[in-house]
Image (tube, rainbow, N blue to C red; front, side):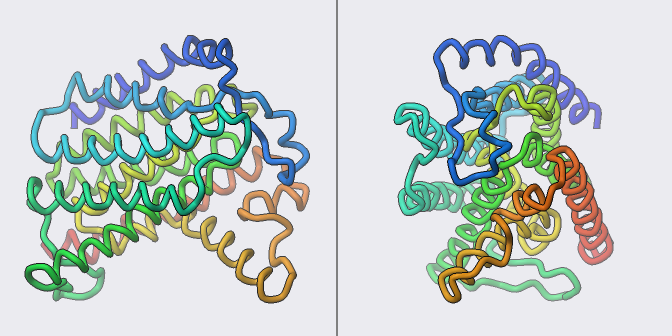
Length: 330
């Protein structure tokens, strides 16, 4: 527990300490955010705000781990997955900055790159970390076994595809208001810090805790009005840690509950697109759903804080389900 707290404290301190200098670095090189013209009018003032702040979070994370983490396959596997997802996000951010446009990588190309991350995660999880090909379903005493050999690996890969690609994209969609994705991600990762600790996966608990510390340090500058945005680098990094934690603790089925807010945001986009294509009508004034509430007249801070409360409720529910259905049965 001391290592978890120390790692989080170091990550927080480094992120806050380097924040001002990093923001100045981005400003001098004009690495600013390009705001969608079709977005809320109140967001136009945010144009030019430094982006790619996920790099700052990762510096805090690595600093915390250098102090307390132990070199072992599990630690390297998680960091490799996080580096890969963050790398895809960084490439996307760089495309936006270099092209001076709000659109970066195409959805198809981003999906392809994240699918390659899934292949990497498969190899690391099954070959080097010893993750089993079974799925633990809360409330059921028997595990769902995905089968032996190639069949089992294939089904496990499909599961990993849903977990990693789905989580990273859901977090990315949530990153639309100052502090929203960072705060919600920190809440979900705090839950996974506790789960990893109870599972005696202390190295994973240290990584999750350090990421929470880095996120809180980032929120020092990302809270409204934001001085820096995390960009896809940050949102995909948070999604990478969340998905890795879910796979290593065998709580893939609980991840949609623990990260419930991200699921709601992703569903709001899917519903909006499908209904509009079928009926040419919109269910929400604007998607993702946090923009819908902005269009209803809610202040940005009110939307963010209330969504944090919703995420806290989901994370608490997910932890209770884990404790009563999984941990208590061990």
